[in-house]
Amino acid sequence: MVSAAGAVVHNWRLKLSALGIAIFLWLLVQTEPRNSETFPSIPIMVEVADTAWTLAGPPTPAMAELRLGGPAREIIRLARSGTTVRVLLESVGSSDTLISLSRDWVQLGEANGLTVEQISPSNIRVSLERALTVTLPVAVRVRGEVPGHLALASPLGLSPASVRMRGPASRMAGLDSMPLVPFDLQSVQQSGLFNVQIDTTGLIGATVSPPTAVLSVHVEDQIQRIFAGLPVRVNPDGAGNDVVVEPLLIAVSLTGARSLVNSLDPGSLRIWVESDQITDMTEGEARLVLVRLEGVPDLVEAVTEIDIVTVRRAADQGAGGPRGGPRSEPRSEPKGGA
Image (cartoon, one colour):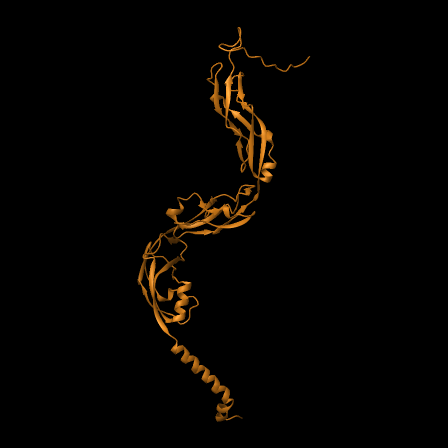
């Protein structure tokens, strides 16, 4: 059996070495520079655990000033990473609540050896409101256009189409949709799915589920196609049959995604002169009028070679020819049979 004295001297070199290391580390900690630093404008974040209530606005004041003490390197680390004062309100007694700030609510993260020496102000005032939950459609917002060598080949897809919003009843009741944060089409280089945040700007105390939506963007190479010689038609309602259009044929240029432009049938395009532009024309009168292009599919841009044509109304050809001018040759009409 080993005596008490023997236990003390057993492995004495190893024990003495461990004691020396412990004393060295203690002295290192004690001699490390300690500092006291003031952090101004630290955000105060209030979370309401009571599901029947929500914040009606930011706390007053919304910022705090902290004085922290501890190792200089830890203070520098915290200054870089940032911090907040997190207030968890577990129960609500009234819509206007005064809360005393606790030093324990300062989020120090992974900092070691820091202490909160002072927090100012000592109290904040929080305004609350009854919560309301609603389901709202999501509204897509975009800015810019896809790069010039690309074109949208289909409308933008969205999933989900609606979200659940919980927030102050006074604000929720006036909403008819929830917009996405504007999506920059210029950033698109190829077709894909893009996660876009729901924009809750100005909705203090509101939460959204899910907080993001998936935007589907389908693009293809942009091409141009020209249809030459599409006829110009006159709406016959009230125009009569004695009008002539010059020129009778117009070229149309189409620009868009390859699949949309290549699949377009020229017969689906219609170039019109509306009758209300020529109903009051007199005999022999010529008039410059606008044409209207119809049948262009969505996401395809169409431009007519010209957008103004000349419409002429024939003069009276009875009793010796037209008045004030030479007689026009009558136009031949196809016969129905031999």
